Length: 189
Image 1 (cartoon, rainbow, N blue to C red):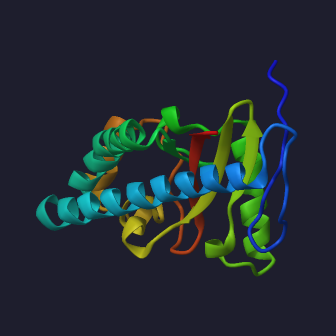
Image 2 (image 1 turned 135 degrees about the vertical axis):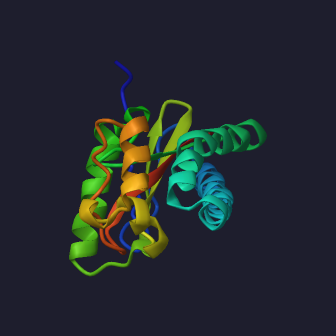
């Protein structure tokens, strides 16, 4: 089993965590690359979702999340070297299931939010061998409630599309501002 050297770096709460192998500058650089990859994924995915919503409605947006989100993430990885994905505690796509570390981090994000911290100040990192694992929360945006809100409020054609593609869907029942999931990245060091 790979021995993890864990340094949870929560912005605004801890600083200066280093490992014997990497100095803080290397960790910071990898973290910046991971954050930039998440920003790019968010930007591209949001644009494609808005376009799908405008031209085909929420059912078309389901296909963007299903097909385009992984493709966009793969494009970003090919150009940046950063493996960027999305995960959640309540998943829609089984391929996005969180591992133990991701689950613990998302639970800590939720606890910190409950204690009054803003989502925008949160991230977490861990050095894992020769790479940095990084996470940042994804709060539910109002537009996303169209497919992730209360099940009874999701349009029947959208709900059908969701269940056709994701029969074990757990990703409903959210309100805007709730923790929907997190960006999770692996950046080389």
